[in-house]
Length: 500
Image 1 (tube, rainbow, N blue to C red):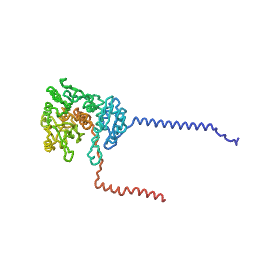
Image 2: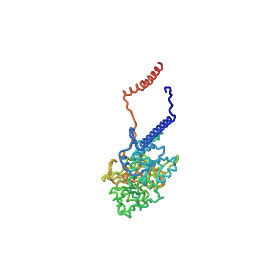
Image 3: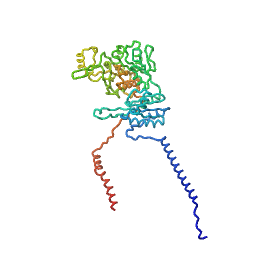
Image 4: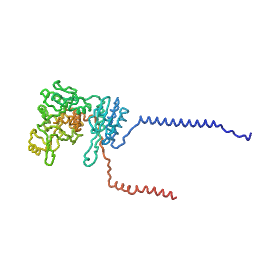
């Protein structure tokens, strides 16, 4: 029929169509979310980092990257850094690069020892940390090693007297951290022979040098007691020996063993007690160009308007360009107890290619008194006025057959001599962290570990601009004319558009 009306579509068809559209939208949203999650997951596991900074401060060297590729197990690094340490940010950023280059082999835990006291104490006890300096603890397969903040940077503190903060002159974090990692991964502790038999402090727990022992053992070094009466020669695996404060002299047989060890490129750390009589040891040192004098260093300190007090505790500073003292240059330290002076005679051993270098000198005002048992104050004051300006050496390094150029590694005999043996005892070390750092540097130098790897420090260089007269003239026109003119032109155009 012509006037037949169209029947409306069933409502059920429209409902089914809406459901299909809704399901389609839901599937699309789910697919998009899935793709986003997959992209984020892949990007989280596979990403690249670039250092576009001008001095490449945190870019790791190829040597470090190749070493990290060889690590088989997991290495855990615990950061004990106080926020006010000048290099805290630098160390954290550098370790982020290590973590990225390690490809999942390095785990890092940050601990603020000033806030998280319980966790810090737990790990300090676990790793036997004996210093309050900011540091890292590296743990690999049950072996651990500490890296102190002072080993990772050269810091200039000369401006502190003028109210300025410390300034980092060179950042050596990569050099120190990679060196520690190599020690741990190699897993072979270096052996340090500890000479006994002359009433030296024992290595047993609770001895006078227990803190020193723990500190050196944290350097991946193993102590081995060595009694010359029981051996015909120093074992071949021992390349370095330590002699601390012998109270009795060495016998002729012992001196022969020590000389043979020295002649075969041995390394010796010798701390002398001036109150002990050791003429054979002194004669051996004299042959090498270091004379141990029979005196005591003293100084008169003013305690009142007209009162003077005599003290034998020596305040000294580290000197020289040796790898041992370079980081401690001009640092002051107290040497408790008796200390004698050393006279260096480098010409004595020059024919045998022996180099002698002063490392520690007493502060100005000290004098060397040969009549050190006298109570005659007038005589002591007269000697002080006569000799107080003479530089007095109490620590020296001796090297036979080495190279004056630190970059050239040559097998050599090495010796460290200090005319004080009490400064490394527990009651003295707890008051002076510098003594631990000095002994640690001495042991590492003796073991040829001062340049374990050749990674150069990152030296901060200020960004400077040099402008000649023409450049300054152009800059003046840009600042005074062009820069104000641009917003003026834009404002004029906006005003004209609104006016029209």
